[in-house]
Image (cartoon, rainbow, N blue to C red; front, side, top):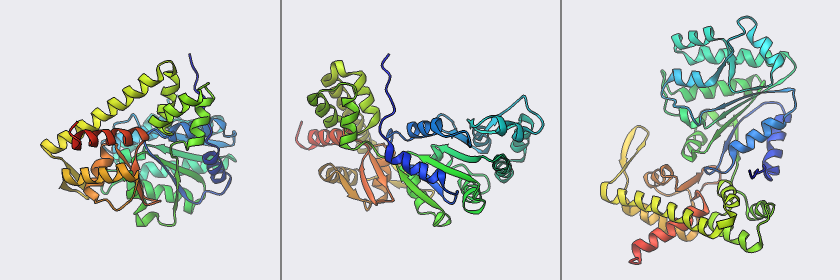
Length: 355
């Protein structure tokens, strides 16, 4: 079986390393286009950290988070065999966790109370215990946007932000990384007054041309094969991995991928034109205007990058359909991938050139 190795993220690894070697002061929000390698990057970092780091890695990707109980279930890792001195025993023995270690009895108590502050106080105590053992806590929440609309009294996300601020800015006891591929969520975070001066942003983008070229050459791609793959997929890591796996039928594979994405986008636009659609902004429903969507796609298909001034309804629709990525830090919109750019160009050509 072909093994695909982790490839050339030195710049991002160095930035994360610099953060981890300093005092915890700021929350780090990690963002980027879908399938740009954010989770893979953190898996690599986690596996290479020395033993004096205690990592709590919580991946919400596969979790259905509808309410407080769902989130708490995802946040903690039950340790059935330890009833007393749970935290002290566990953090002294283990350095990698899939959640915050807890007993079933205490977790059930949090469920009954239904108050996130009580659960979060326990997390603070865990971090203090890690520090007392001479170790450094690292809390990573992957796909954090999954809890964006969950409400207790107020939105749960704001209680969580307060916890992050407590652990970093106030206690300086835990490095916190919040990872998300939802660019609208990051845009919302970026505009939050409560986070100003309390967080930083780390972009994990697709590979640049040279990195993508080196990746393919590492698996024996010829110059012609490299150009073919990059012309279709740009630097999108997940597509490049699949290109390596399908090298024996590369041209056919590229054509299939483009055809599939073209059909998906064409179908989405067809449904929008015939049935209409709506997006929710600040709790209100707004109608998506087909003509504005087409206009934005035409301009983006030509320029490949636009300032973040596209009307809000159109932008949210295109992001929701995973066609467009918003970078609020740099103030730009671009396609999620080179494949999306090519697919949109073909769809618009078919629609307006009579094909």
